[in-house]
Length: 178
Image (cartoon, rainbow, N blue to C red):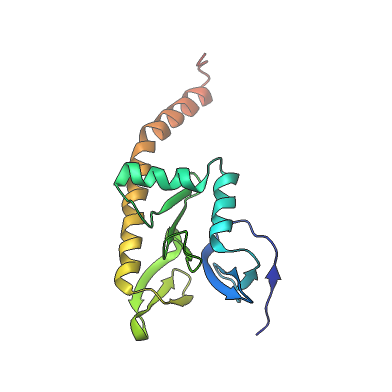
């Protein structure tokens, strides 16, 4: 297999999954991006890439986890909002403290099917698939929890968006707001 190995990676709107893989005793990431012909490898565990993305957006992973716990009552395997404005919502396959934990972008998942031997096949909106050793029911639960969390966050932002839109419209019409 032609592997592309990187030492670092920044999540973006095209990132679909950060899959955990063990290589010579250390945990690394296999990354699939939307419309990318091949996955590539990063010599960093998925949770470390998620932590980095959270910090780049002004928070720690623990804080993002606590947000889902407070809003939705999720106590374990909480989905996180890395960036609400960029629509970066991810959910874990396992506890983030488990090195086998992979992270999937909620935005990119189209469907989850049962795979052979109790695992699941995730189908992304661009047609790519990935097989995970996590049951279909567990994966669907994670997908639905992320949808619930995302909905609650977006409902909280609606009044802010309306206010910003009104202010922009008034400014465009020449009204001085201050």
